[in-house]
Length: 196
Image (cartoon, rainbow, N blue to C red):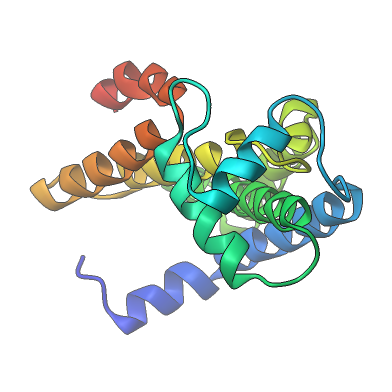
Protein backbone atom coordinates (compact mmCIF):
# COMPACT_ATOMS: atom_id res chain seq x y z
CA UNK A 1 0.00 0.00 0.00
CA UNK A 2 1.45 3.34 -1.05
CA UNK A 3 1.38 6.22 1.42
CA UNK A 4 -1.14 8.65 -0.03
CA UNK A 5 -3.38 11.34 1.40
CA UNK A 6 -6.29 8.90 1.50
CA UNK A 7 -4.22 6.32 3.38
CA UNK A 8 -2.93 8.99 5.77
CA UNK A 9 -6.48 10.15 6.49
CA UNK A 10 -7.64 6.58 7.14
CA UNK A 11 -4.67 5.76 9.39
CA UNK A 12 -4.53 9.03 11.31
CA UNK A 13 -8.20 9.94 11.46
CA UNK A 14 -9.82 6.53 11.52
CA UNK A 15 -11.11 5.20 14.81
CA UNK A 16 -7.69 3.96 15.93
CA UNK A 17 -6.21 7.37 15.16
CA UNK A 18 -8.90 9.13 17.16
CA UNK A 19 -8.25 6.81 20.12
CA UNK A 20 -4.53 7.50 19.81
CA UNK A 21 -5.04 11.29 19.75
CA UNK A 22 -7.44 11.14 22.70
CA UNK A 23 -5.04 8.98 24.72
CA UNK A 24 -2.11 11.24 23.90
CA UNK A 25 -4.06 14.36 24.83
CA UNK A 26 -5.25 12.89 28.13
CA UNK A 27 -1.74 11.72 28.96
CA UNK A 28 -0.30 15.13 28.12
CA UNK A 29 -2.78 16.86 30.43
CA UNK A 30 -1.84 14.53 33.30
CA UNK A 31 1.91 14.69 32.64
CA UNK A 32 1.97 18.48 32.21
CA UNK A 33 -0.18 19.00 35.30
CA UNK A 34 2.09 16.85 37.47
CA UNK A 35 5.51 17.68 36.02
CA UNK A 36 8.22 19.29 38.10
CA UNK A 37 8.19 23.11 37.93
CA UNK A 38 11.99 23.24 37.85
CA UNK A 39 14.97 20.98 38.23
CA UNK A 40 13.89 17.53 39.35
CA UNK A 41 15.78 14.65 40.94
CA UNK A 42 18.46 12.37 39.47
CA UNK A 43 20.21 13.71 36.35
CA UNK A 44 17.74 16.49 35.56
CA UNK A 45 20.04 19.38 36.39
CA UNK A 46 22.94 17.95 34.45
CA UNK A 47 20.79 17.13 31.41
CA UNK A 48 19.16 20.58 31.46
CA UNK A 49 22.58 22.23 31.60
CA UNK A 50 24.04 20.13 28.79
CA UNK A 51 20.95 20.62 26.63
CA UNK A 52 21.03 24.39 27.14
CA UNK A 53 24.76 24.76 26.51
CA UNK A 54 25.22 21.95 23.98
CA UNK A 55 27.62 20.19 26.31
CA UNK A 56 28.22 16.52 26.94
CA UNK A 57 26.42 14.69 29.74
CA UNK A 58 27.85 11.80 31.73
CA UNK A 59 28.64 8.62 29.82
CA UNK A 60 27.31 7.72 27.28
CA UNK A 61 26.69 11.42 26.59
CA UNK A 62 23.18 11.16 25.09
CA UNK A 63 24.04 13.12 21.91
CA UNK A 64 20.62 12.95 20.28
CA UNK A 65 18.86 14.02 23.47
CA UNK A 66 21.31 16.88 23.93
CA UNK A 67 20.76 18.10 20.35
CA UNK A 68 16.97 17.77 20.59
CA UNK A 69 16.99 19.42 24.02
CA UNK A 70 19.14 22.27 22.74
CA UNK A 71 16.72 22.98 19.88
CA UNK A 72 13.68 22.67 22.15
CA UNK A 73 15.14 24.83 24.93
CA UNK A 74 16.03 27.59 22.48
CA UNK A 75 12.81 27.46 20.41
CA UNK A 76 10.35 27.12 23.29
CA UNK A 77 11.03 30.42 25.05
CA UNK A 78 8.59 30.01 27.95
CA UNK A 79 9.58 29.45 31.57
CA UNK A 80 12.95 28.23 32.81
CA UNK A 81 15.17 25.87 30.87
CA UNK A 82 14.37 23.07 33.31
CA UNK A 83 10.62 23.68 32.90
CA UNK A 84 10.95 23.64 29.09
CA UNK A 85 12.79 20.33 29.15
CA UNK A 86 10.28 18.88 31.62
CA UNK A 87 7.62 19.90 29.10
CA UNK A 88 9.59 18.09 26.37
CA UNK A 89 9.46 14.95 28.50
CA UNK A 90 5.70 15.39 29.03
CA UNK A 91 5.15 15.74 25.29
CA UNK A 92 7.35 12.73 24.55
CA UNK A 93 5.53 10.64 27.14
CA UNK A 94 2.15 11.66 25.72
CA UNK A 95 3.22 10.80 22.18
CA UNK A 96 4.35 7.40 23.42
CA UNK A 97 0.96 6.79 25.04
CA UNK A 98 -0.72 7.74 21.77
CA UNK A 99 1.52 5.39 19.80
CA UNK A 100 0.81 2.55 22.24
CA UNK A 101 -2.93 3.11 21.74
CA UNK A 102 -2.57 3.25 17.96
CA UNK A 103 -0.39 0.13 17.73
CA UNK A 104 -2.69 -1.76 20.11
CA UNK A 105 -5.75 -0.89 18.06
CA UNK A 106 -4.09 -1.69 14.74
CA UNK A 107 -2.80 -5.05 16.00
CA UNK A 108 -6.24 -5.93 17.36
CA UNK A 109 -7.75 -5.10 13.95
CA UNK A 110 -5.16 -7.32 12.30
CA UNK A 111 -6.15 -10.18 14.58
CA UNK A 112 -9.77 -9.87 13.49
CA UNK A 113 -11.29 -7.70 16.20
CA UNK A 114 -14.06 -5.35 15.21
CA UNK A 115 -13.17 -1.66 15.05
CA UNK A 116 -14.97 -0.99 18.33
CA UNK A 117 -13.09 -3.76 20.11
CA UNK A 118 -9.85 -2.68 18.50
CA UNK A 119 -10.35 0.84 19.85
CA UNK A 120 -11.09 -0.61 23.28
CA UNK A 121 -7.88 -2.65 23.12
CA UNK A 122 -5.90 0.42 22.07
CA UNK A 123 -7.42 2.48 24.86
CA UNK A 124 -6.73 -0.23 27.43
CA UNK A 125 -3.12 -0.52 26.24
CA UNK A 126 -2.69 3.25 26.50
CA UNK A 127 -4.13 3.32 30.02
CA UNK A 128 -2.02 0.35 31.10
CA UNK A 129 1.15 2.00 29.84
CA UNK A 130 0.43 5.64 30.64
CA UNK A 131 -0.83 4.99 34.17
CA UNK A 132 2.27 3.01 35.02
CA UNK A 133 4.71 4.44 37.53
CA UNK A 134 7.74 4.28 35.24
CA UNK A 135 6.03 5.95 32.29
CA UNK A 136 4.63 8.70 34.49
CA UNK A 137 7.89 9.27 36.39
CA UNK A 138 9.95 9.60 33.20
CA UNK A 139 7.40 11.95 31.63
CA UNK A 140 7.37 14.63 34.32
CA UNK A 141 11.08 15.40 34.65
CA UNK A 142 14.07 16.21 32.45
CA UNK A 143 15.34 12.75 31.54
CA UNK A 144 16.20 10.80 28.41
CA UNK A 145 13.74 7.97 29.00
CA UNK A 146 10.56 9.60 27.70
CA UNK A 147 12.25 10.61 24.45
CA UNK A 148 13.71 7.12 24.15
CA UNK A 149 10.29 5.50 24.59
CA UNK A 150 8.92 7.56 21.69
CA UNK A 151 11.68 6.26 19.47
CA UNK A 152 11.16 2.67 20.62
CA UNK A 153 7.40 3.01 20.04
CA UNK A 154 8.00 4.32 16.51
CA UNK A 155 10.37 1.43 15.80
CA UNK A 156 7.83 -1.08 17.11
CA UNK A 157 5.04 0.54 15.07
CA UNK A 158 7.06 0.41 11.86
CA UNK A 159 8.31 -3.12 12.49
CA UNK A 160 4.90 -4.54 13.34
CA UNK A 161 2.64 -2.64 11.01
CA UNK A 162 4.64 -1.96 7.85
CA UNK A 163 4.83 -4.47 5.08
CA UNK A 164 8.22 -6.16 4.96
CA UNK A 165 10.32 -4.22 2.46
CA UNK A 166 13.72 -2.65 2.10
CA UNK A 167 12.17 0.74 2.78
CA UNK A 168 10.59 -0.42 6.07
CA UNK A 169 13.90 -1.94 7.15
CA UNK A 170 15.67 1.32 6.31
CA UNK A 171 13.12 3.31 8.34
CA UNK A 172 13.49 0.97 11.30
CA UNK A 173 17.28 1.21 11.07
CA UNK A 174 17.28 5.00 10.88
CA UNK A 175 14.87 5.47 13.78
CA UNK A 176 16.62 2.76 15.80
CA UNK A 177 19.95 4.53 15.24
CA UNK A 178 18.43 7.70 16.66
CA UNK A 179 17.28 5.65 19.64
CA UNK A 180 20.80 4.43 20.26
CA UNK A 181 21.98 8.05 20.24
CA UNK A 182 19.36 8.91 22.87
CA UNK A 183 20.06 5.99 25.22
CA UNK A 184 21.92 2.70 24.69
CA UNK A 185 19.15 0.74 26.45
CA UNK A 186 17.58 0.61 22.99
CA UNK A 187 19.95 -2.27 22.21
CA UNK A 188 17.63 -4.48 24.28
CA UNK A 189 15.15 -4.29 21.40
CA UNK A 190 17.47 -5.77 18.77
CA UNK A 191 16.44 -9.41 19.36
CA UNK A 192 12.66 -8.74 19.32
CA UNK A 193 13.05 -6.67 16.15
CA UNK A 194 14.88 -9.49 14.43
CA UNK A 195 12.04 -11.83 15.36
CA UNK A 196 9.30 -9.42 14.16
